[in-house]
Amino acid sequence: MTHLVVKDLTAGYGDARVLHGVGLTVGEGEICAILGPNGAGKTTLLRALSGMIRARGTVTLGGADLTGHPPDTLARQGVAHVPEGRGTFMPLTVEENLRLGAYVRRRGPELEADLDRIHGYFPVLKTRLKQAAGSLSGGEQQMLAIGRALMSRPRLLLLDEPSLGLAPLVTRELFRIVQAINAEERTTVVVVEQNAHLALGIAQQAHVLETGRIVLSGTAEEIRADEQVAQSYLGYRV
Ligand SMILES: Nc1ncnc2c1ncn2[C@@H]1O[C@H](COP(=O)(O)OP(=O)(O)OP(=O)(O)O)[C@@H](O)[C@H]1O
Ligand SMILES: [Mg+2]
Image (cartoon, rainbow, N blue to C red; front, side, top):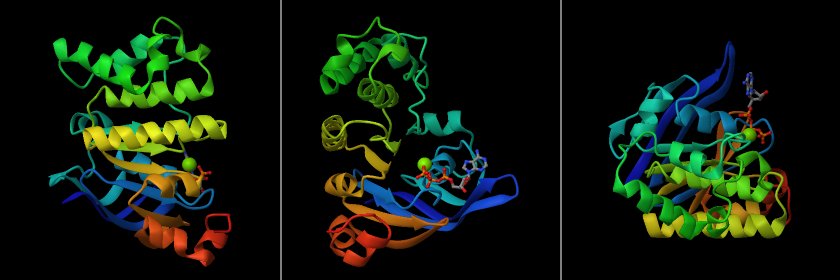
């Protein structure tokens, strides 16, 4: 079933248009990878999907029209965005960051259950609850950022370069956890990633974005199998 439908999306900053009519669909419970060179507009696409910047076009999630709504409305509709640079509150503790992630929902006993759920995915966070987020390692901070996003029980999880600055081993572990979250919660995921190999390893489908346009779409296997694509856009040989 199609979950996220994006049609003819244009967005930018001031007079500078960055996205030029982007269209894509993501099935419910699927992982979709967005690949492409620096400056292609990948971050801008996620910002437009979470309402951080104004966009024109249409965005629907599970049939509900999300177009043009502010970020807090979209968060209530189930969109969680883990931005580039993670967006955790450094002076606050791990626990405070996690609890803040649930702000779009009513408080209640399920909040404690959700904290347990997050600790299940990221056991290391449980041992760091009273520690300031700013004192965590890069990998732990990325885990906290994803954990915080999960506290809102998202229907759509937007991840911007989760591997940025992390060691390969930590990145692989992180992607394994994202895959587990997707499998267990059926959360639809859109992941922007420079590490195409890793992203294609967990995604069902992928889109290559270049200068604000989608230049190639296909299943993860199709994109991986296209050697020319691999060389021109993904920066590696298959
Ligand atoms: N806040 C902003 N104000 C003005 N221009 C911006 C802003 N953020 C991004 N841009 C411009 O928009 C274009 C697309 O940037 P974007 O960050 O979406 O690319 P990206 O594909 O995420 O790149 P990267 O792989 O380097 O993260 C770039 O030309 C960039 O300079
Ligand atoms: Mg970016």
